[in-house]
Length: 360
Image 1 (tube, one colour):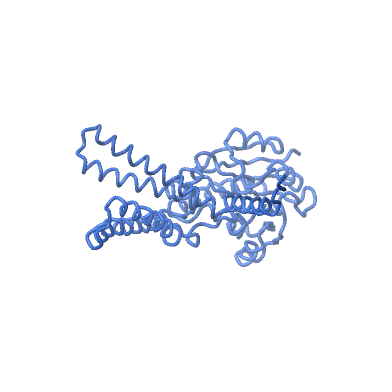
Image 2 (cartoon, rainbow, N blue to C red):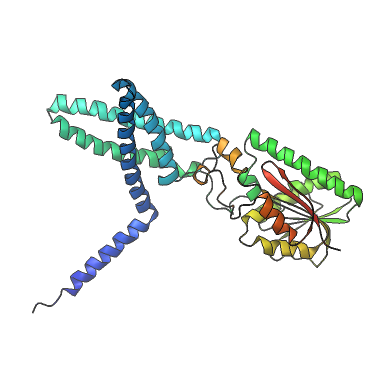
């Protein structure tokens, strides 16, 4: 009886595992996804063309409409599902689409004039020449998309810690800035209402970022001792330049380095949506607060709308990838109500704003 070739089996097994590893890699996933959506795009193109013909549209007009719609469909699927790039704002998105159109027109010219040149100059068979050129165009389209169109260097950072969350998600367009200005107006209005009742001795900003909120508070009430904390050392460095008189510390919201009942007012804006355990953060905020709290989170799904209108986070329907929690007025009010007595819970499009106080 012939003994099994163990060495050959090991080689086959090793080859299989290498192939499986490649298929699971980023490059393998990308190529498979590119091929899959290429097939889907071809089917969509045929369906559109046939649909226009059924509507009684002349074939050359149907072909033009199909070409335009198919190219938009291919761009969207390539961007969202194949190369997975993120663009911040409508300008970068339009430039990316412009590069896509240019590259596809260039490869179409290769297809058209390459067929004429090879058939007329070398007498090649038109069908097989077209087949070879179709493969060449597919390869050229992938290379152009990878190197020219969907450039990772132009996409928005994937690492949620690479930039301070609040300014990563908002503040890049005129629309966003107007919304932020409106929110800041409501925030300062509520803060002034609190200080009118009783001037606080101190204030804590949890997740202070670069210190913009602390700067507004300092301008409004210069005699209040300000403290801020954030997990980002980079953000705190900028905050020290903006509010040099504030006491700033690097700290986690889950473990605030302050004694119980330390602050008259605690502010926490745009932080809870990033946390796996927002209830633990609220428990810590409750512990260090002796008076009032001002809390805010994005109001889902309204928060998505301005992002979608400006072409941001299209792959997640306008939701920033770092947003782990999705809050609505009902569940946000209930969550905060477990720790504080409610004064206000209102929508300041596209955010929710909560004002409460610690039980005396």
